[in-house]
Image (cartoon, rainbow, N blue to C red; front, side):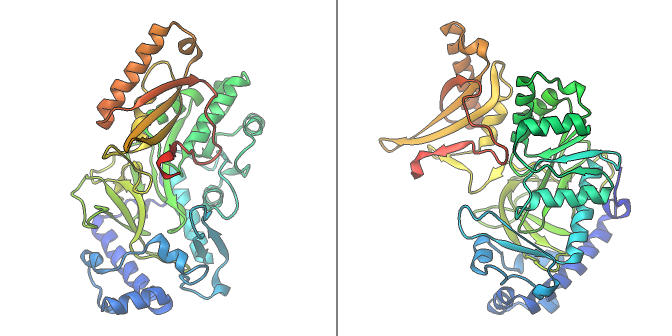
Length: 432
């Protein structure tokens, strides 16, 4: 199924011509109306009027989150405030918030792009979509809400939290699609079990999850527990919100909406393009944003591009699910470690529950990592030999995956914190 088939299946030549024309328009917009970019272009002696090839993208300056913060609140807007109909911002938990604006046309495009992703995931106007992302300055809830309404579906804007009420609403309103973080979907599944509710008795068929990295093993766990087909979607507030990319029902990579976003994958150290299929940092240039266009925005998200054609027929390039962030990556004993690597191992070991936490400490100038793993009751209270065997299995598989040894501690189910939004898997005591 397609939402805008003629756009989603356009030829590569037509797409690249459209991207070039839209990039030229965007460069004119920011060079004329955004002092930050005007100054950057002047310093780099760039003439945006003479930009005539996508291959010249490397000549353009990068935009960093710090640049957005330093121009708080409206310094990066490319239109007068009277043309801005919506303002969102990041939480600002690690610094000053980043503020983004939307014109009426930006909102229209946003709705269409999310409708594309919902359609690719199998949803139609007949679905009842329960959005358990937060509403407010965060873009997640509103962006998916717009797309669902544009699709013609029935939207339940329940927001996040109050898990038992979420489940009650699913039962009463006959929810067919759940939209939230994957970690919250697991939490909902666990609470259902505690309440004695069998998901097979619900109308739930689809899960659309995003806003945090998650593994294929976690997808299998969610699908099995809730009896649904789950797909990944990607977006970030700085370039729009949800709607940048999403999986089709093939579940093999996220189709990037390339008619609205020009993407690069670069080595985060050298800032040079990686080889095809190699992992690097995702860098995004917006092509149609009016209020808040950004040039070569460094997302800090790590992924790789999948150039092979998709059986679904869409011609937009796919990207692998987000593997982690450059600023979330742990360096333990000189080795790069991502929480999703640990997750993918734990979810495939019998006896473990799908909840874990990583604690990193420094003792005598040496890094030490301990993985706390919830285990099923039968293992925790079984004979010591069985516990020891499980610990050794986990340690062995983690060592094979990570290339370093880590300590493993088994804990009872429901010991570790549950999350209604993005999961906080790591406690790095080296920074405390």
